[in-house]
Picture (cartoon, protein in one colour):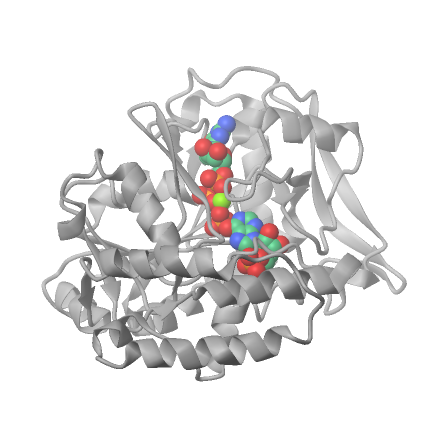
Length: 421
Ligand code: GDP
Ligand code: IMO
Ligand code: MG
């Protein structure tokens, strides 16, 4: 039986958490395959807002096992806080949350390096969430990392100390930044004891057995396609493969098992942190989108940059991920807009282009098409046929450009505010 993938097609925060939570009850297992506590996935459970950073968004569905995969970088302190926050809502959490033995651990000094290296970059900073993501993935590919499975070997604390020593030497190259290592270490070691109470498994075998038994698996992406370390707006990206390909390496699943790829895009674009954003609106329309969409980071609270939906960028993401179904979220945020725009090409020194260039600085400006807004509240629409004509036109443009059906439409933050196409 198949593995379905749900991931973001823009710069993150597309509303993945809500969609994963909604669809999770059709699966036996929900897995995170990359990223770490840089993610902030918002769900509403019985009207209560919950933001998950590390735990997969299937955790609120009874009978669903949730796995933190080997492609994830895990901060035990964040995980511990998260477990504390949802413990009363998920009394059987320890039966349904499991971690791959190959998941990499974020050390306190990874966070310190993240802070110091970002501070040293000055204006060129990436706008990292400062959760230690980049330094931890550097240690993983540099073959220095500490993995969850290592915690069960008698000498792991020596390995911890020698990695910490390397980090302290590495930190000497940066100007000093404030970081209370003792305090962070105390909390980290305390959290490690709690982490050891969570079931640690060989996730690749576990998932293989599930597939053999005919059960369905969902892979939940974090960040978004434009933050992919290979294909995103490099170097203003995160340090993992956020695209469908990351599912295979991040969980130990063979490509042949992947069936549906549900790509999530907001009805407009947002980006938090620095880096290219061709359709960005640095005017009152951008401000209006930010206000209407409450566009402030779920992890850091930073204001998100806003702009119109970018069909050039979206088509690129659809291609990279092999998207079979599009899910458009936050359409309700455009309810009051008299007109809505979409970017359909970029202007460069060599003329108009309809593809993403190697060098994003080549883009001087964008060309937009303007469509009539639907100018009405859509909270009463519960099926596709009842949608306003202008909204159907908006969705048609997306489908035509991306050559992919819009199968899901999200019309509000609550679990049930979804329309199937
Ligand atoms: P994620 O990281 O992709 O899971 O997205 P975030 O949780 O960071 O940001 C999405 C925000 O939009 C959250 O506050 C959600 O509650 C909210 N949201 C998701 N879908 C919708 C929608 O269709 N309409 C509205 N108004 N809000 C939504
Ligand atoms: P979710 O899963 C939005 C951005 C950061 C920064 C860049 C690198 O909630 O969609 P990092 O901390 O990874 O070194 O930061 O990536 N970023 C996100 N932006 N949503 C996220 O996750 C993000 N995770 C990282 O703002 O620009
Ligand atoms: Mg988010």
